[in-house]
Length: 414
Image 1 (cartoon, rainbow, N blue to C red):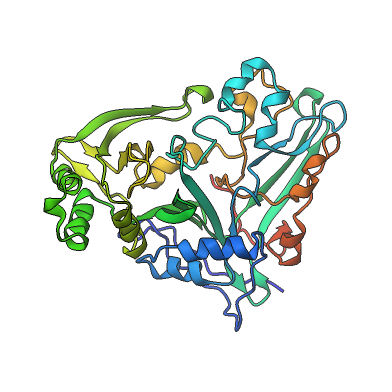
Image 2 (image 1 turned 180 degrees about the vertical axis):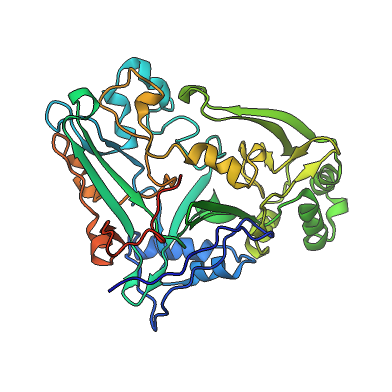
């Protein structure tokens, strides 16, 4: 059946960098999402989700059609796309497997333990140095009478490409109206506490971004402390923190760069390092009872000349992530695209001496999702890329068929 979908306006609403809703054929019952996480893990994440002041996002949190995953069930993976499948293997591999099979000159692409890629492709942006973070991802696909409008993929096979090396690559596109997101939690004594929700919503020619935080500005946090801790002025740590929050001269210059990836990302700005809050019970109360609001284009604090877009802290457990670099990452499309546009790019563009290695993980400017059956990753000397059975069974992923998947719903970003 032809999938009818109205064109999505690419205009962003002024209040938060979101995109107008996608109109689809209505369904009496929303399709159930494939269950990638265990019931226990999913229940744990759902119980820790914040309330957000955005109706569509709150609906996504509550919908049975939302697909949830973390890095345990969606292993960060790349594809070896260059080779012949025999002497030069092709297929999908966990990111952590790469360090042992590339030349020493390429090892700079990895963290010291070899388990993650270096900034900016190893972790959720700005959290590389946050020790107690825990991230859960979600995907909300638009639907019609047939079920999900799927993620569509194409495969390219050309043994003569690249001077005879051969190219065997998968690419995929998300339908207009898809929302991809992640919830950043801090973990304390085994419990999860949300600190930020990030979203990317697909429109015809790009992705609109947003982030939701309990306290998008320093004044928001100061007001919350005054309201929720009436005796704050008699508490040394709280009074010092409130004073810090209400001062304008606490921001300091900061530069963030990615030398391991040829400085594909360099930015300078200012950060605000918060002193200890000193009350773990109050931290938990603030994070679990405050409604998260949009931080799109927000300034955390300004001294009249310079501005910080968010804060960090050296305290292990606080209302903002410790040792984070989020303070120089403005919540705007222009900030996020600098890294996301590299999804699927060939590694040898960054390190020509890297061998047996393929592409930056992800496609269509999304890093966290890939369609393959990861149980096949143990196969190394043959192409192991097949659609994950759960995705196939639930209609989440489908091979591109131009007669069904129209250009006004599926289009490569220019």
